[in-house]
Image 1 (cartoon, rainbow, N blue to C red):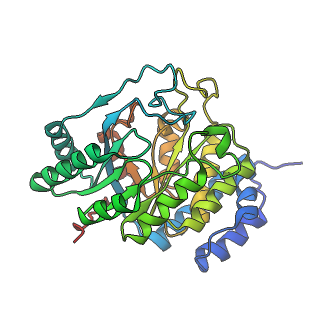
Image 2 (cartoon, rainbow, N blue to C red):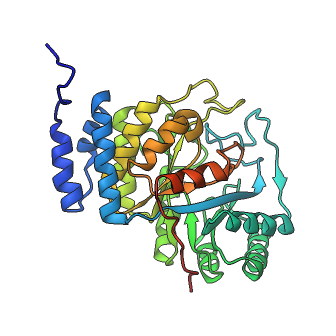
Length: 340
């Protein structure tokens, strides 16, 4: 018989994680992460609390804020099944190029929110010479008028392009693995998991910070979710944006459905316990998957960075809503120094 004041059952994996991750700073392995992802509902608060303690101990209390904008939206030749920017699907997104004055204006608006990072994104397989020239021009104009770190996400790169971006002062490069190696062929067929890894390796070798994210809720199993967290941990990126599928009309995953909020919270805890020192950033889909309450729980459960405002093709929470929540939770916004 269960009593109302009975404490929730203890779970051995949380005791193990407290000693292994919190005390020793060693991330959980793939098998251990499966156990976190399978925790019952009544253990979620304890898992999030532990993840929060890990974040505070190994990352500090600061929260990093970033804005993103697309310099080229839509018309991408790749077939990422979740993405409305693919030119291969009957999606309402159509190719648009953003002009440089608009880009500078967006960077100023992003900086005004308190964000310290501004990411320029292009929906391409990889940049051609014309796009690289545009990026160089945009970086120079932004640096002339705005004091903000510049990041880029331009698809797969050659070694020469990596070297160019590093020389131009790009602070961080985003190139997401998106999903586990074993599930990747179910989501993308026009390029391989290994091709993504090659770009990630070159970016790190060039001295740029690597931002390498996950998109969960695409139909992968819990085991594949754990596999992805472990593969990201092995890559040791500086930052991991955590996205939740927002099914887009016209894409192969339009009928996938929205991930359960409790599963999303388990994933947040698991990813933090896999990567105790990594910047774990709230990204796309959290508004639908978690809502306001879940967003708060995640910020108190291992998240230590936020994308504010809108995403590439979907609307996010208003920037002020996130910034006000950070103030309410007494979470200081990180002020990054300009990279030299």
